[in-house]
Image (tube, rainbow, N blue to C red; front, side, top):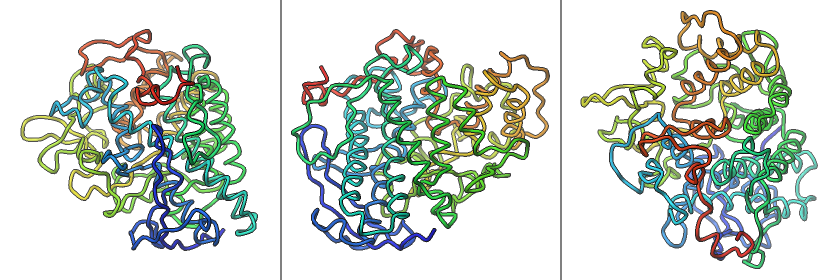
Length: 495
């Protein structure tokens, strides 16, 4: 289908209560979705007046997921543009802190953060900002459905539901107990599905984890039905959601839920029966032959299912750029790779000849190993990968190993591993060993992409924390992040 060219509009921020749920923030973008142009303030009453203005709001949904936005108090509301992924990974055994800087997550690394942590509070706020913006957009689109065709309206609804599902899923991983701990019976998140423009509805209790997951899956099922099969260009097939993006995200959600049969059902929609594995429907996803190309401009590889685009005009603020955390290229970094056991770098499944080691890591003059997936030089314009085809293959491999075909599981595992180390042999594997190899492969393939602590939690394993110097067990209050104090103080329903 044809995508409209975007002109620039911006709706001003309305600061509300503790949740800081702005009515809407429209990013400034040009036809290529990246370059900023002069902003124009658009009133709420006219925000849906034209197809161009509606599209600008759709594009703004994705900008809010990044949330490289400075609120009226000067806080950067970092969300999925890097801060979230970093906080997930530094909690466990894969990285070592270099700076003891609280701004860049030192207390998260040490598991000493409380509910008053500014950066986790900002992450919570940014997540709900994205959710409220999706809610506001859905309501506005319904009230102005005559402004665009039925086909375009359906696609836009699907995109908003995809954004809302991704935001809720990201938050429930951090701020609630894993679904697999008690089948989702634990308190989850306040489930906000209506647009809020005042603080009148701040009083809202937490729904259960199961109820939050039910809404996430509902949104993704509906998004799959409504989204375009193909967005019409390599760029738009990466920076805007399409059917395969919704399907791929469902494999992640069902994996976190421990519903391996559903992982297989969804994964098999977009993974061919035999190698070389590609998507037989919609966008033709496949593993990129060269792993380095996935993380190199223009970031439009067939492996990239959904990424957050970054341009010089909207890079993350100081001490939020993912490249500055991990890559020493600029002469400094926040976190080095833990090169010793139990870190994955020392695992024998990750050999020295593996391209993920030779091409995506390096060693600085001091002997510290560091990650080079992301550029370590300003202006830090790497696209942030959110969903890759390699992850889908590993999601499906794990599900098949647990409840399906071990032969298929092994073939999927080998496809991912042999892309970077073609001569490696897994030898003979029983079911338990196959599952272990797949879980190890996730740590290698997805290092630095925000999966580590979430994988640990869904498996109800202890977090082997380098920063805390101990294992954090599932019964430990530090196992998940606390609901921010500001939310507790301002939302009576959450007590």
